[in-house]
Amino acid sequence: MLEPIVYDVGRLCMFKDSYTPNIINLNIEIDEPKLLYDTPEPLLEKFKKSFIGELKIDGETYKYQVLNYGKYIERAKIEEADLYIIADRKIIERKELTYIKKLREKISPNSAIYFPLANPWEIPLLAYLGVDLFGTLSEFYAVKGYKLTKNRAIKSDKSFEELIEENNKVYLDIIEEVQEAIKKGYLRNLVEETSISHPYLWANYRRYEPDLRNISTFKKHKVIVTANIKIPEVKKYLERLKNYEPYTNIILLLPCSSKKPYSESKTHRKIIKAIGKAVVEELILTSPYGLVPRALELAVNYDIPVTGEWSLEEIELINKLLKEFLKKVEEKFGDYKVISYLPDHYLEILEVESLVVKDLEELRKILKEYRGDKRKQRVHNLKELCRYQFYHNFLPDNIYINRKNQIIYKNKILATLKDKFILSLEGGKLMWETLGRDSFYVETNFDVKKGSLFPPGFVDCNEKISYDDEVILIKDNKFLGVGRAKLPGHEMKKAKHGALVNIRKVL
Image (cartoon, rainbow, N blue to C red; front, side):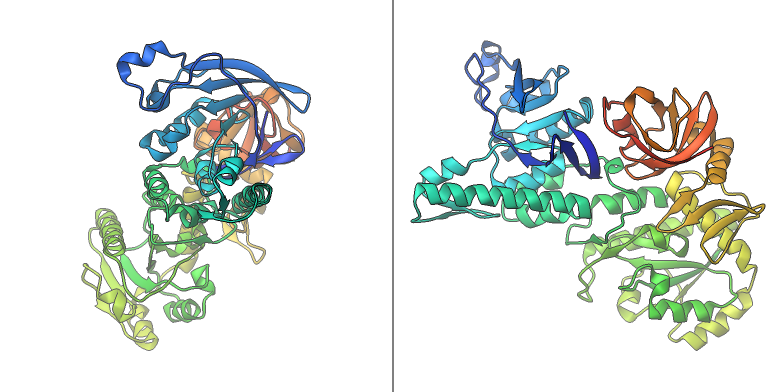
């Protein structure tokens, strides 16, 4: 029914000549009484809880399943269908709303979830959770004399016909905004904007744990950070940060900058010049990511309101991550030395001892005794970024990066470093030879060509693959080519049609 195109926790899909999330008013009648949300459990068996049927949309027939479980939605028995309909809108006001995630995990990515009666301000959160299609409440509010806005219903003296027209336009506007938010990677921000005024929405937003594979590991657009620091991009980063291996036991703590990557800011360019040939582990302290090694600065691209004051959560996170990092350094090297080149408001929150340096000239003098092989450190940094992107490093020791940001090994290009590593055929082949099925592989049953891989040719894949990840193609344990994932790995395994991988190069 649907063909997923873009993921941002929620997803944008092709549906005939339009896109989802979208508005669609379906007239589906059920042949028995609807189960009320608060039906007592002893009466549960008196009601039919699932309705199966077929409907036509623009001449095509689709199988649907109506889930008539009320607050007992967790007991829903899912059958294979094109369209799943949530019968009771009251679940949006309760914790049962999180069932939508479980439903999405069970069904094909080509199947749609339909929420028949949604307010405009509920649509961003529902789309974030995985709902594709919505019915409206335009007439309901118009009959009562209410005009809808993006965030609320307002009493109005306008006629019924005028209210219907205006209310319908509000729905179309919010759908357009949701679609654009998914394309540009700020759906979460839209959810926060519309949910904050409605406690039942905010509660469901806060309790929802999205699948981190449904967002790109390296987002092209800036992550806009709000007061809620437990955002999926940060959680994904922190999980992968655990794999980072320090290069040296000389730790230099640095402030963040508004310009990303940090090394392109005026402040950090001066710091890098002062470091010179010294070999130190540069750690940028920041909210909400806590701790960013210089090697991983391409992995974070964000903007956050700066007030000059740290929240308790920010202080706790930065110190927790720093202590964990220093413990890892101590386990590897036996001891460590920490040098801080930080503004006072950073120093005030630190719970670790360090040598505080106030100016760049002093920093330059102190670091002279730690001069070492910078080339080896650059190789280390590339390996750690590789480990961050693919969970494992496959880059050998004797690599270098040229002025075109190409990773060279034995006169062969392994990858180009842009916003992330873009694999060449040589790089993809080396990944497969080094990591085997720990690599980001997609297995096929035919010799692929440049273009798209579709479900009929799909055999298996690494479920750790996220949307937009670089992947390799294999057949019968032989390397075939490289491409980019159009679906996360767990969705590839359930897909029935649509592109799974954009195949860029083949042998």
